[in-house]
Length: 180
Ligand SMILES: CC(C)(COP(=O)(O)OP(=O)(O)OC[C@H]1O[C@@H](n2cnc3c(N)ncnc32)[C@H](O)[C@@H]1OP(=O)(O)O)[C@@H](O)C(=O)NCCC(=O)NCCS
Image (cartoon, rainbow, N blue to C red; front, side, top):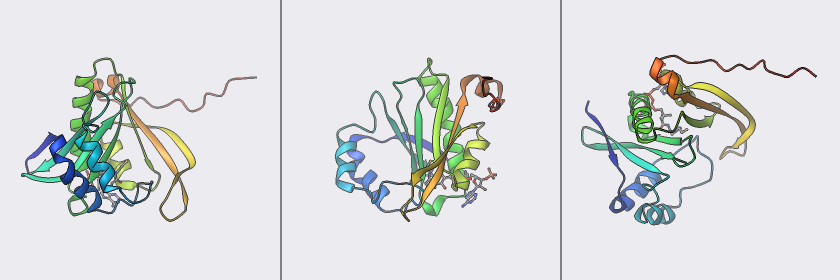
């Protein structure tokens, strides 16, 4: 299996919108994807600019997903990762995040962390974080409105540059309430 990561370019706008609308994304909120708005944004370069970098995940020549890093200009980039349903569970998500860490820490020498959040019941994404040395840093109660009307908890993970370099996961010190 040969995996490459290829920039989503302005002229990919229609293909990118088709990819997003052609799949169901059960763990994302915000309602149905607006194909017209996505097409316009990609065509306008909003998916690859100073603060955003988006790459197709291409497996043996086929576009199987994408990874979009954003907030690149504020020191702690975030990302969204989407694998087409037919290709989930093959290790592509884990491999994409492994690639993204190297890409972002190389692109942003001043950044010391990469962050992401997901819905609490997104077991596959949480496994991807763990496999890549991310630590759970946050638990937001009832913060993620699901398409079914349920308010799910959200969880936040991050990886530190120093942990990535030393292949460790520094645990969060949770028991830190200050004495009165
Ligand atoms: C979440 C997602 C990116 C994971 O990518 P993936 O390629 O399917 O995941 P991988 O094959 O790399 O598997 C990662 C781990 O999740 C586990 N896993 C895969 N599918 C799973 C499932 N449905 N339930 C529980 N665990 C699952 C795998 O066993 C693996 O665990 P391991 O490292 O302990 O072996 C992908 O499933 C996806 O795009 N889902 C829809 C969009 C989404 O939720 N994106 C997350 C946005 S924050």
